[in-house]
Length: 250
Length: 250
Image (cartoon, chains in turn brown, yellow):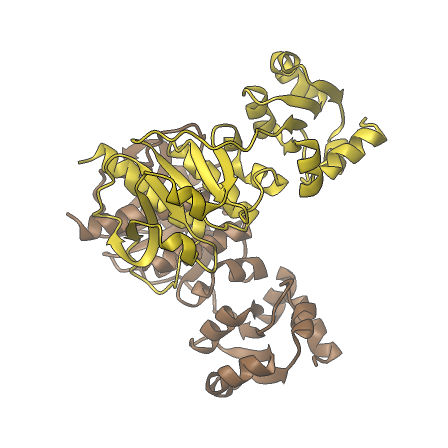
């Protein structure tokens, strides 16, 4: 069972204000909690079924977290998942720190990605393609929102997200900046030498004017059909796949 | 204002059972309703603000639909959107008909895509890449679910979805079948000559055994990082982009 006080604490972390205050967030489901326990992030509390605790005994013990053995109904009451028959954990946020991006590395820059599902999917996709860092505008969805953490499928462990003023950040960066527009160079024939920053725009407004003026290379994903645009996470994936391809196939 | 009877009818279409019974579905938002009015689908009812009706007067009149001038609050009450300051329409479903796929054309086959957001995004992405037809298992989310229609961003007009028994369909098709697996050929170096069927598996279980046995060419999207898998709509986009590329760049 989860005590009333613990339950109140865990549930409060659904709200950004309390996450910020406590510097904590919630991870739900077996995959996410296992990834968390295997990482260098600090786990504060694990609430899990006896089965999950048996299967992950060493990892749970080594984490030093408070451990509660609970029933699926308790997990569903405490968390945001409709069904959860494994585990839920509370972890400590990472500090919001500017990442060190190597000159031969690509990173993503998110200009107001508002939808938590999109942000989570972008993080998962970035992780697949070996991207280690994301720089996000202050208006981008919160990494620690339960929907974002869930959609990352554990990739929040390996990809860092740094929230900052994008115009300022880009103006002071020496990396090549790429952005997706309707009138850019064909992503299929572009060469992505070295590294750089790939800017992804807001779901409806695209890349903001202040950021647009700082973009050096305009990319376009060629269209064969009738849709007006691509979903932001889809556009990210297509660009990252073309970069991966241009780095391995010459 | 929308009468009580109309309101009840529109709201009932949120439920699959009633959609099936009435053979009708709801389209919400300016973009979706405009696409609908510009298409050959039959529109039965348009509820819209005076601004939307003024801006789209000819299209609305030509549709022959019943027209109701309403306030945003009425649209939000009748539909599933939290905010809607433009329009909502009721349209007639298309018959569930087996499409004619040309031998030089690619189509998608969805093996139990359960998430409405994923299905909608797949339809939108397919439309971008000029895919006209999708064949879906009976367990795939319903095309006419409001969340699916919304995520297509109007592309439900241009892409057909045919629900059927996939194993039976694939066994009787003469087209080359492709499927994404972890041990297939590199999608970056594969040649996609002619046309074919691209099978996309369920979000957690992947492609089912019965369907797997009918796949001729196994594709893999190369991974550089730590994520275990890609979201189904992301994998679809990456494969379609590689097909588009292989057809234009030799």
